[in-house]
Length: 322
Ligand code: ACO
Image 1 (cartoon, rainbow, N blue to C red):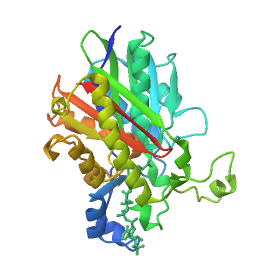
Image 2 (cartoon, helix red, strand yellow; image 1 turned 90 degrees about the horizontal axis):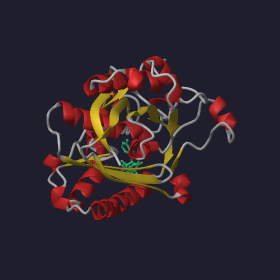
Image 3 (cartoon, rainbow, N blue to C red; image 1 turned 60 degrees about the vertical axis):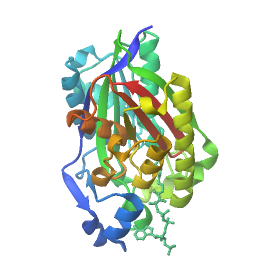
């Protein structure tokens, strides 16, 4: 059976930056509160009309270039997003046409902040069974469109962006183990409480906004991410000391630090982008991965743990040799 190995990464952030000082002029908050509670200093926000596929396209071209492949070679596109361009077709199909990778299967995955881990775990199954050889896996979000800019409890947390990887069939080890989970009983703790087939009036009124019981989500996230570490290491036969890098979902620096403590890792081994990007949901892990690959921190053959927790609740991890 072939291994599934990441051969290229790419990311893209919209130009416009909103600092915490900017947020102070919009809602009753302070730079100090945001930094102390979340670790966030700024976030990027898409321009009017700029969509999740627009961001994904830029990130994808960069990943394609880094992998040194032609877009026509891509034989599967998996696109993680909760902020798709259209109700249908999928964002994966819209992206496919932009890239000229026509004919291969293309579909979206919706697992909110765990979306990229879900997408990568799914893509790995296609590669390891021999169904696909070169997969484009993307996470892209424009959460600024579903944030209530008058709700200080949520609007300071999120940002827009995209990240992508090329996952190829390889003789060399790549993904060592992947685990995805969900527990739908916690739907109401973190959701946008409307959609096409329910509370559609709210969508039409332009009030399709994130609602989150932050404190309860926080506790669940810390406990669950602790369990993920044990599950991943047990399945791969690895030890905590074998992991070179933690690339976690970037929701909150305090959640990230708790996960690092669980792994006995120093924060020097943790890729942190939440300070500059905020929480970009399904885009946060591939964005952070790309940053650390391009600045030379993550090197070939190093062991990297990706882990995420998000709405659903959903959670999961991917352990890989880069
Ligand atoms: N500025 C100033 N004060 C604020 C702000 C703000 N931006 N937001 C909330 N407050 C106030 C609250 O009103 C509250 O005031 P009160 O005590 O007078 O009632 C006080 O600060 C404390 O609020 P908490 O919600 O208890 O603060 P907490 O320390 O829990 O931090 C936070 C909030 C940052 C949201 C945290 O709970 C968190 O990060 N939760 C997890 C988020 C997460 O991981 N989500 C999952 C992924 S996201 C996804 O899947 C889409």
